[in-house]
Image 1: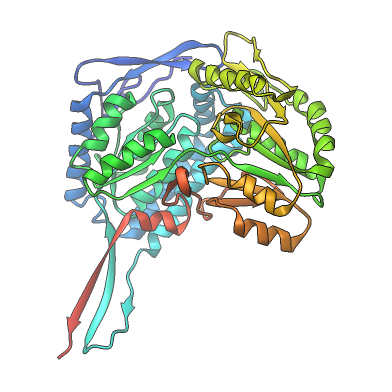
Image 2: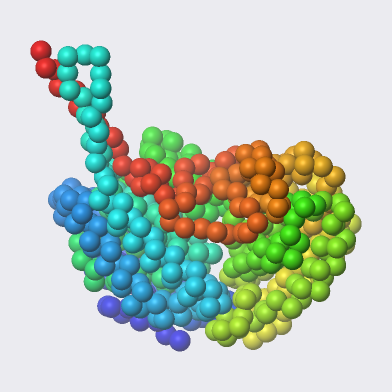
Amino acid sequence: MTTTFESGPGRLFIGGQWREAADGARMDVIDPSTGQVVTTVAEAGAADVDAAVRAARDAFDNGAWSGLSGRERGRILHRVAELIRENADEIAALESRDVGKPITLCHAVDVTNAANDYEYYASLAWTLDGATRDIPLNGLAYTRSGPLGVVAAITPFNFPLILAGSKIAPALAAGNTVVHKPAEETPLSALYMAGLLKQAGVPDGVYNVVTGTGPVAGEALLRNPGVDKIAFTGSTAVGRHAASVAGEGLKPVTMELGGNAAHIVFEDADVEKAIGAIIKGFVFNTGQFCMGGPRLLVARPLYETVLGILSQAVPGVPVGDPREAETVVGPMAGERHLKKVEEYVELARKEGGRLVCGGERLDLNGGFYYKPTVIADLGNDSRVVQEEIFGPVLTVQPFDSEDEAVEMANSTPYGLASGLQTTDLARAHRVADRLQAGIVWVNEWAMLDPAVPFGGVKASGFGREYGPEALASYTKVKSVVISLD
């Protein structure tokens, strides 16, 4: 498959125009299901990033977008959502080829949620207003809400379409302009969306795409003085660096970082229902999901029962070619991600873990496949338990009390998501309140909607994606106080 764009394959999109990198550099895009090159894209350097930021600054300063009313911006963003749905088959195929996602997942989750992102924030754009405030002075006080300016959006490889939309849609709804640096492994949907946004009526320079590496293009974007806000999703290590650079420039940031969520199964859980959520929690997106549930904590009376069911059910999860409709688990996004999973599983063996199922590569068409893997009996201080594996691996541990379960769940440095299975409503509320996570799911996993904010605590970051909270993070508030003397 050769992917084509409006003005030739895989060029940078700057100021409304397709262009090659200043030095002509290009980089390969690999299909994870075969390990083969699918196309090439421009590899941006610092000069290209600077050009994109200047284009975004010019577009912001001339008011072509920020000068529109929220309602006018909302109408255009509604059109973006419509175009995503009209081109759903092409976008899903592109995302599947680029990331290795099962095509069914791309349709049901990625494309659907991307359209919902733009539709939701198109509606919220109408709500951007201020408020009068009652003050004990002889004066009139009111607030005005306005855009920040140029937003740098840096997005990861695992959900390129959704995690771009979760930043770009609210940033544009608020009146900002954007320079987007997608992950070097998965740049194709960002380039496709550039064409759709232009077609919808987004003015030139409002949305710009620079494809390239993190150390070069990403670093240049972080350090560019023309950027007013940084919105980043990625690893905790890179997020720390990005936040420190933003701090040097006193720039606001949103950081959605790594996760290692615990999924607790209490003794009163509906086990049959819980098993589906457990499997979904760790194989969804081939385990490459920062809000996945790779740590399963099971009440001791149910421990061996749950392990027995998982040992039979997990090997039956369809793993294979992402273009096949029945595939549930596709390949890892690349060789380095696959090797990382292998290293953790080998470490689990050395640490005394019991391999319940999986634990090896799947040789298929030269792709980066790994069998869904369940490992039991590791201690809570195990690196395999404490660190983020980011693959289809589930560790299972027993607990003896509610307090112990909560303590184990909160014991890692991360705090992005968490979940529990129980039929006790009081316990559901009580435990959810005690879990250190930005979002908690009860009796299901990965229930996400643009109206529901998510984000991290501890090493999982700060700020929120989705909801009106995200829109507010792309605005600044000005107070006006008028004397009535």
